[in-house]
Amino acid sequence: MLTVTLVLAAVVAVGAFLVFDDAGGDAKPATSESDPRLVREDSHRLDVAAGGKVTLVEFLDFECESCGAAYPSVERLRKEYAGTITYVVRYFPLPNHANAQNAAQAAEAAAKQDRFEAMYTKLFDTQKECGEARTSHAETFAGYAEQLGLDMTRYRADVTAQATVERINRDKADGTDLGVQGTPTFFLNGKQLQVSPTYANLKKAVDDALAAGS
Image (cartoon, rainbow, N blue to C red; front, side, top):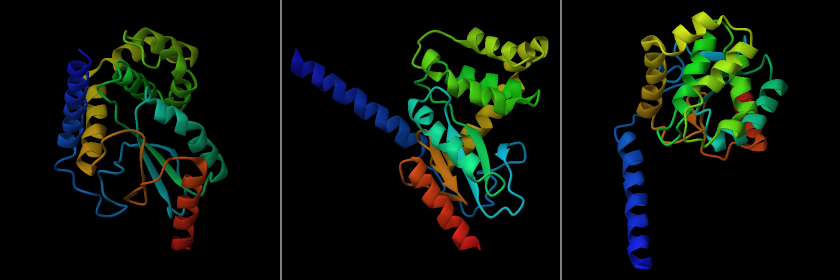
């Protein structure tokens, strides 16, 4: 029985690998920092630097524990480099997270009322309350929207609108095309960071980019 269990586990693991590998199989790396797949006109920019020397793009999943772990480092970096770097959020909800899509739709519905950052913050600050749940937390997220003072009639219309879903899908398609296979994935000035997203690693990458552009 143990042998059979191990074999089945191996098959599942290989199957999962193949799904991710297939998703990025035709990926085309970013050609430059101006590659439109990295930052589009409607991408959510939480910080904008006038000089434009450094742009940090994060493809994230609001339910992803690794994204939650990186969140404090990102926020510390944003505070330290406010006005110096541009920070952009792109959606990349993973299929194995039951509420990743719901959370992304909640964030996008909030964005339509100019409250994206407030919902972004709320979703990460409360991630442990909803993360890894197997049931829908759409109403929990609606509760957050109400707490943030959103027009709830408009929120409920926007959160399920086809345009909202398509907007998220476009982000994910861009990420997939760029080779994103998991979250969080960061791109700094067009190049994918291949380091763990700790504060120290992100800070060094930003400092190096600033020095190179000076």
